[in-house]
Length: 167
Image (tube, rainbow, N blue to C red; front, side, top):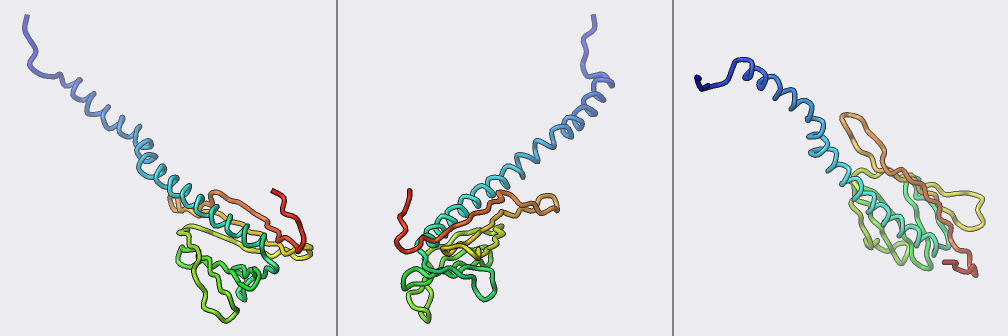
């Protein structure tokens, strides 16, 4: 019996055709692991930072004696005792600014890196206590389409003087 010293043409062509077909079939998994998973991790981290910022807003509004929106209507101005707290978003950085006097220089007392944050502030009229509504979402560009992830809405009410804190 004669021994073989190579591959048949059919065997070689099968491997040449099957290998690219296998790569095409697994390309979707490759995209998931190289693009979608890291993008999702960044979105979750950004949402966590956003929720931390929202917790600060909640605490500020709870202690507020008045809440109003700035001249541009985009960011809140919260009066707490004799100090004023405001929030501003610029270049993907949300900053919490506090000043003790109206004319005083603002001091950054908190900052959060939120490059994809879309935020909408609204003051709720007609409430007995000052109220602030905040709508947030994390915007991501995926394959040329902008998607809003982690869409949330929050409503915070300031305590009126003499009101008990319920926890």
